[in-house]
Amino acid sequence: MQERAATESGLIVVELSAEHELEADHVDAVVDVKASSFFTGNAAFTNAREVASLVSRMGELGVQDSAFTLQSVQAETTEGLLTRSSSALYTVRIRLVDMGRVGDVLAALSGLKQATLREMRWGYTHEPEARQDWLEALARESVKKARRVAAGLGVTLAGLHRFSERTWESRAFGARHGGYGGGGDEDVMPMAPSGSYSVKRTAALGFPVSHRKKVLVMATAEFQSHPAPES
Image (tube, rainbow, N blue to C red; front, side, top):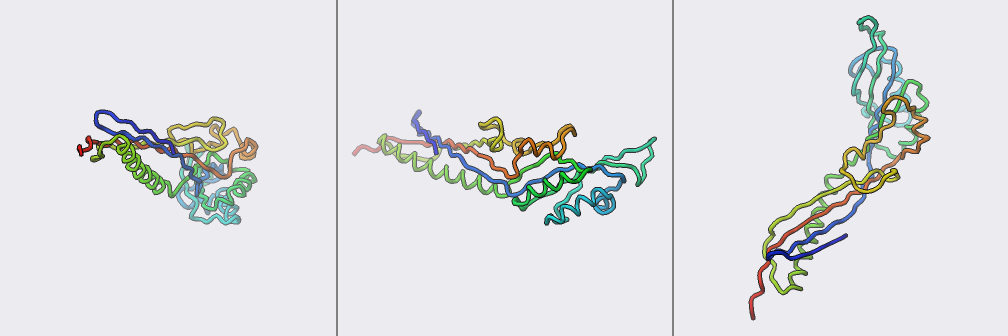
């Protein structure tokens, strides 16, 4: 934990920062499936042969049917005629909660000729709660620091004048560039943005099958102070 304290116009300003790590507890694998038939809704998971094959293969690895969500369907038509026999591109999201099986799932996807892994979205279910705990810890430490500074300066600590906090998130561990960015997109790992990469090729590039990120939390607290009463 880093800290800094200063006084300005009767204010004691305390700045604290702490770095934490979060490990993903689930990941959404977004998969494109090229199929020879067109269906919409949940019917695609049972009636579109290639999509059903994906569900069946994942089921062998313990992935429940509830883990699958159909995100979009793009039909390919001939002369504007749309029928059940029209080919289609299905985009399916698979939520994986058993992080120990992520590698097995990705390996299985590489054996499905009509499936292409588009991206992986890492998720942190307990992140909001963890961020709140970190902030509360910094707030408590800010009060302790301000009291120590006030005692050293021979003044009395009054009420809180202003409090603010900021956070930064790092990129994925093992990424080419380090440092802190603005968060958000760092937890989405594209696999084949242009459709030119297969799962095997992206696997050869060395993408991780587990994911951690660093979060830097900073807090600034301003306290009012008064001269100590003369004895």
